[in-house]
Length: 80
Image 1 (cartoon, rainbow, N blue to C red):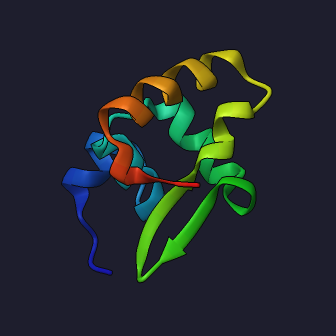
Image 2 (spheres, rainbow, N blue to C red; image 1 turned 90 degrees about the horizontal axis):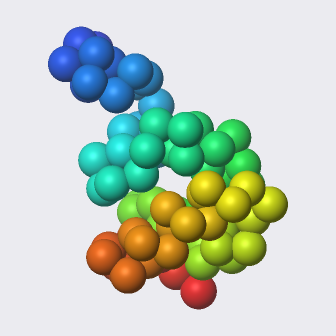
């Protein structure tokens, strides 16, 4: 992957999962939480990252609230 300084400055990372999450409305904190717990909450389906709906049951209330909004507004990001 070529260095994309715009994305690094905009999103604070070069991690593609974190960038994808932030582009789709997740906050930086929630994106980092999901990345750090990716084995629990992320799957790659046909080369596309999908977030497991079990994230709605994580132990962090602020993340649960944020995910509830995104499940409603961007359901294509999630998988059962």
